[in-house]
Length: 186
Image 1 (tube, one colour):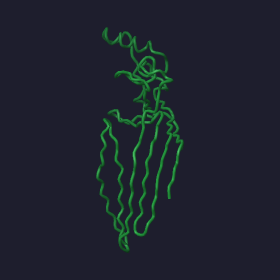
Image 2 (image 1 turned 180 degrees about the horizontal axis):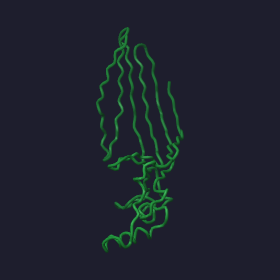
Image 3 (image 1 turned 60 degrees about the vertical axis):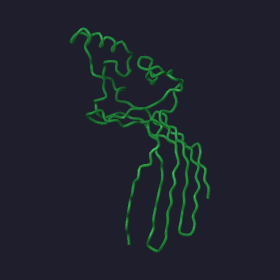
């Protein structure tokens, strides 16, 4: 049996980080050294609701909704004593919600990418902190690959299940972690 699923759209609602560690630290233009005061003046010149503007605002705690466009092509074969499933997939995540540990607690942030080559510049869409124009953003995370699953039943009360899912890692390498799982039931 072959199956083709395409254009499946997923959605995960945005929200707010409940811990206040994501808030910008308030800064003073008169309480520090000359360099600290200059840095604070520069931060305060950024528009309201902009990360790193030196003013704690509720927008510092907010993260956007995540969307995914998923495509999958698969084949299943059920035979006597053996079942085989093959699937290839492609998933594009926009505003991917990344749960990051900042050294104290976890905070959710969104990830995007830029369609243009920025030659190493920051990729966010902020005019003050990034180089990517907002209409040139693209999905920040793309998951792609294939999976193979096999279920063997060589004798009564004996079954062997195997799966293979090569995982692409940062840098373009592919790794196949070995996970051995044994179960017994009677």
